[in-house]
Image (cartoon, rainbow, N blue to C red; front, side):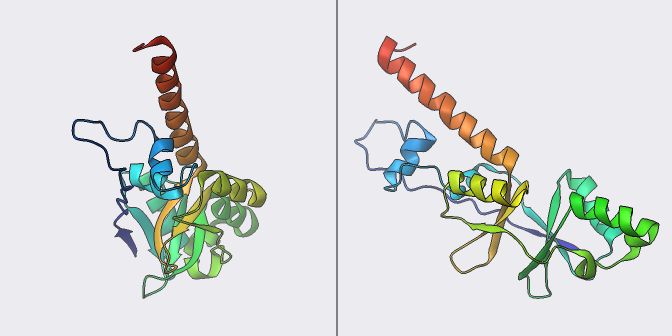
Amino acid sequence: MYRLVPSPHVSLPSQARPPGQPGPASHLESAAAEGDSTMQIRTVLSAKDRPVITIGTGASVAEAVAELVRHNIGSLPVVDGHGALVGIFTERDVLRGLHDRGKEFCHEPIGEVMTDRVVSCSIRDSVHDAMGRMSAHGIGQLTVLDDDGSLVGIVSVGDLIRELHQAAEEERNNLMNYVYGGV
């Protein structure tokens, strides 16, 4: 009833450097090597080491909840028989459904109870834009689509904060090394 979609391991092209020179010093420098001064969603996805877990429209709510628990995740992209994204099922959907319908909700097919207006971002979007989209819609996860509109991943607000924190730490260390010489 569910399937694992391999997580894309998108690597950023490294800037040409003389032999013996290290690669980019930070996430921001990696983005700058691509001609962009901001971190992109592709960077966040490349740091994730887990596949995208999806569920079909015919699966029951109980099956979806079992997958959420088993994989310790907060949402499941819902795909049709061809693997196309058609909705999303979240913890919030579970709470609302149980509140409104009780135990019977657990037997409903996902295709009838999912959120069908999926808020997504592109693999090329900046982390800043993705965070703004999450904030504007009051959500904690975004499905990520490639240039063809195919599902390639999902990012959570925690993923974005983790990457921004790591980039800030790297930048701080670089500045400390520059100012104090090798600290």
